Length: 468
Image 1: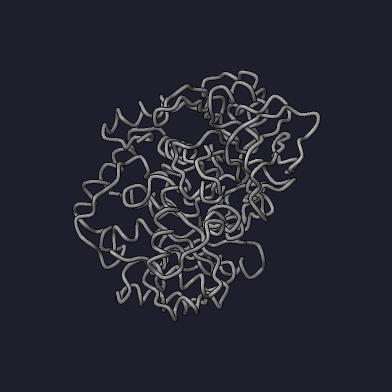
Image 2: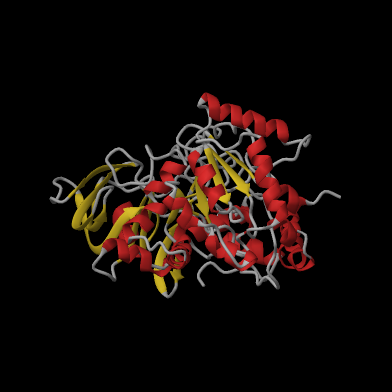
């Protein structure tokens, strides 16, 4: 019998995916139902994190789907939303398995030597794998992914990595938040692989093809799980050697986890131009140790963060940022708050090969914008201290995806639709719009959160809550 969980978990993105189909006629051009776009150009006023500095007072002007201006003088001719907030680029979560984020956090009963050990454990089958096999047969495709993307969105994340193709993952188009390793910004220049193939396996030719595409410049980012386990673990060491034998250490290779690598090996992959995505919370809970991220930074390796998946990872990228900060201090490298923020914005965009589109508040970039309550004089420190309850507004390509009800009404001229919902987020009234930006399935409207929740809990009552 086919194990649907194993297919979904290990699918990755091994080949180019086609562009999404043309949107149905009469939908406004953005998919099954257009998201709530701003009714006119506008400006946000508050503390602004720019590519070069943090201003205590500045303006971010949004026109259509792009940032039109970032300036300290009040703009003329546009509506200004006066705020006392911190404005920054939307967060980029560079590693996860989002379709599994419908579960509550799992309590590992023991520490494991490597990821293959916990994937084979009985308790993991009972608490995660078996329930997922049930959901894969009882809820419509993409239900879990859409729920997980809402979880990411309300935490300030506007782009994610790790959604698999088919099964519980994406269909023909991009759903609510951007998928950095799928078709995005009119192109597909990324690939992702969960398990490094063994010699003679089915995926070995696919790996060889991907490495060739990196060499020809057709692939910018290749996300690869590597050496996920404890340092000294023999299986992880063998995997690393196989990785080197494949000549897979390239400037396009983005290593996920690499927690079993020692300092010399970290410097070896850094010298080859590899990049790193770090998920300390999940590593610490499963293995009792995590990647030598301080060593990677010292070697000049670009480092981004990923919340991994909810069974063992963080509930949000903001939470993961706090774990990373503490762990770096323990490793003897206390980073300035500005550099920590870059790990989930500009550096993350550069790792993904998308820094010409997202990751900074720069004129001409996509208007993927996060607005946070302000509780600290230093805007960078404010981001590092924030939790999802501080989120005041999230824009994706200028669309108002999530925000305070008064701001949502003001910016969208009171947009309504089947995906627009009023809800309470950590005790705060907010408006959520699940209008999908691309793709869609025929004429079906994008499902609101309440519908997704009903589908999931009917099949599996202990679904993990979003606002908790």
